[in-house]
Length: 282
Image (cartoon, one colour):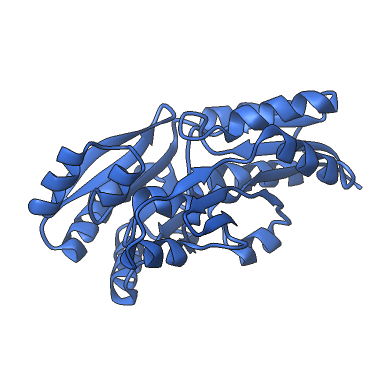
């Protein structure tokens, strides 16, 4: 039995290969449509979400696991580990942190829940860092302190093709959605102090807009940690993904440049052809 290990939510957007590599177990979110109630990753994917709307679907509702599901999950994990550090999506964008905290109270300080204030592979940066620190035999208190210090250093941003999905998710008004569509405006959003905010916009051809977004995000490469950077996307044409990959390697070469697909939960909020680069600042 390992003394301490890390768990997280499926919204960390790590692939099955990476989950296996880091020996990670995740709590699943749910997606509800008029066709049923589906477990993210296991029963529904980002591609399914895009297909659903392309075929005329109108409404999707994402649901975080409740406290009872976290209790069941933590019970299973504590059969394998003496203590758990559970790393969640930001509490301002999901109820999962609140549910995990409520569940943790049942385990006599054996479950330590950490609110990243981020989403998608922004969460993954915290998860991998916690694992690295555990492998260095750091204490739980030291690990949580390090993660807390990372909050303002993790850059979680993405560019969306339009504002349609953001409107469906209640993130923007109908007027904003229509203006974005009419003028071919591509919103760039980011996480700041735990909240999702509009950072800037790109206008015109989407491929060119994506590359301008990448250049803007990497304009200060000397202030970016070079060990790891994620390219995370909902759906993305192969040629555009290759261009993004090549541009990052040119502007800010890193040891690990990792491509991952967004979960259905994340995709249902940001939409098709959304792509983000997520890294840690020095």
